[in-house]
View (tube, rainbow, N blue to C red):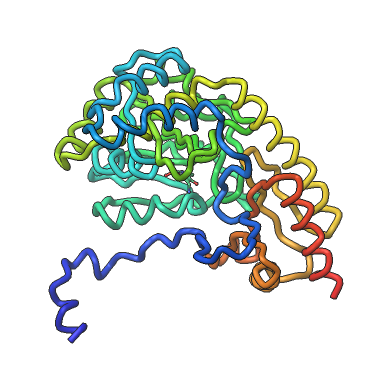
Length: 358
Ligand code: PMP
């Protein structure tokens, strides 16, 4: 029966290997969740009151389809014009529109072989010819290798899941050489010590920057992401969105995101706190015998000298601690650990100590 019904699938569905997201626990047992890079702290009180204050009309009325107030807030923050801003339901949706609108050409789309695993899924889904460029033995990205005929370039900066940062000068260098294709810089983790490529937008109108409020604003559940680019690139994303007749964001998301972006004090305090915890966690992991890559994100990527990551991850899970472990060959011995609260990180270190010493 199910075989007969599978024949109804379009050919593309047979070829798709779906993206496997980090586990979202279904139980209410106490769990320390360090597997999907959420913020361990509650969002700004101003976000909560904006959502409370707008709840009635937010539920009763249709949302503003162009998210005017939110886009203005984003434009002000980045010192660009509102025509440079596109918003979507999380940066995954903004990326989906970007792949469809700007990256589907005859020449291959270039990306690192170790990067955000959603990119190849989008390529499969939208039938985009792509080529993976191997990262170095130290997992670094050499942008010089991206100086070849292509239909676009996409990379995350800092990269996921390594957390490594590409200096702005390297991005400028490749942008000077690749002026004819779209260069997508996914800055999901840029707020944790990296230098944004926003300053390059004026000089290089083929760059598009993707941001999210899921990590540095503690709003993963609200689903808000955005793109910054030249108005002509933004128009391409808007055409895709409008073809689906999809509203970009509901009223609660628009109100909450606007309040979050305006509360610079909350942002500064919490991003600094996470960066300080990252330093402490990296030091504690090194002390336990881990090699820890230098991270510029709200997670660390680390492998133990003697222990298998799959075993460590399973043992941690038994003790109520979730971390991320990937099965792809070059990174199968690494754990990606989100930066939790001080208490979460201490609990993780204690648990790892017990597991390693047993
Ligand atoms: N880009 C990168 C590099 C990510 O790691 C993530 C989170 N998994 C996203 C984009 C998507 O984040 P969101 O959809 O929550 O904005």
